[in-house]
Image (cartoon, rainbow, N blue to C red):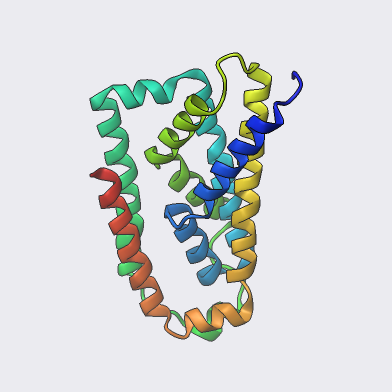
Length: 206
């Protein structure tokens, strides 16, 4: 890896921070898993989200995202698949039964670590807007002469930073007192989450 252009890196890190801190599907799924299943499930979800960033970076670095953005049908298919997955998660939440507060707070999370990881991963991977965000980031900020090793370094940083950020969210929303407040109105929490995910799915499709 060549010497890092720190101005370039700081610009990328700043743009990424603004993007990752704005509410979206990644934020919603992390909060949902943390509140419903606890801190550990939320952290595994966050790790899945961070891992998904690697794919977006590879798409941006090697040009796949450019192909998707310029091919109307490929872009449409990606939007439909991603939106359908978010809508599916939303519908499942709307159909969920009311939470049993004490049961949820005192038992091990009923969702496995690998399933929590996969949900975070798939929500992130199927968000075509994230793919195009990284494409625009790499196109607008990174110089064409930037060595490939440096571009990959930026990507690794953003993947780790994303996982770390949502892990912080998981720790906060997974706290017992915070969970108690959400789970006190558990059925409404599920309903609101379901409506939010369906709205995000429809928005992604459109």
